[in-house]
Image 1: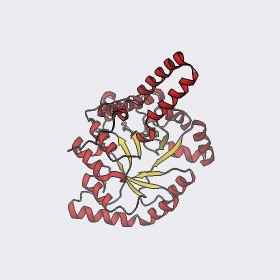
Image 2 (image 1 turned 90 degrees about the vertical axis):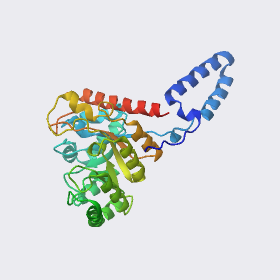
Image 3 (image 1 turned 45 degrees about the vertical axis):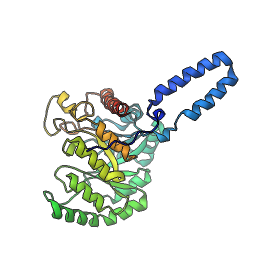
Image 4 (image 1 turned 135 degrees about the horizontal axis):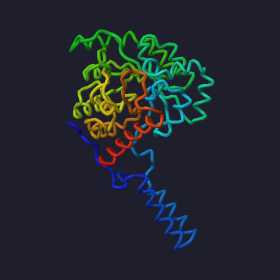
Length: 332
């Protein structure tokens, strides 16, 4: 069962932009009536009653490059801030090819593009490499000041109970050399709960967290691959806590493994399909989640943009973000 966080004072639950607009209106009225001196005193009052933005829970959005298919980085990077994200997640083939584009550009040219558009490299997604062949990627991430690499867990599948728990312990043991390099480099390795992998079920995620050797090994939480049960998902968020490094705002909808009409494919996005994200967001707020949040879906076939052009992709991300922000507003 979901346990909502205790309410704080009334001010902290007012919508920030609306309240700031109200304060601006009051300040304008004060200026017209009493002049600049009074206006300055009202400004000091406004600062005093306006809670610090650091005290309000908000999501740190990460934009997955593969949403745009094989589009050029020079086309995608200007979209990052438009979506409300501050960082980009580079995906390789077959989902996208922006990671390969980085290699063609070279680190210096790539960093120049990031600076030009005011964007950070937040994540390198490397399912293709797997968890045991990340040494070069870790070094590149450190060179580019990228804090996170997401990959999958390689190991036996179909295990349960004690066998699964033991296999996860052995997986973590095998990762120790990679994790040592990651820790030395200031990079976190996040394992996604992916279908048909060692880390797939809620129990496997909990047992990975239990075997957690350090903050260097974390979890990339993908609701898509889990039962679409909000109570279960919220409990799992509480159980994993600060071991979650990236949370995919992604539901199952009608899946992503076969061709289907676009409107059915888009049901993976928040606000489109049936999953109510409010209990999930409440749980993230409860644990004071500070990792990345990625509005996400997969097209079929892979490598295709989720919509017909760049601006339509960005529009879909913004619609999903608007839904999530509305969910926050309803939580109060």
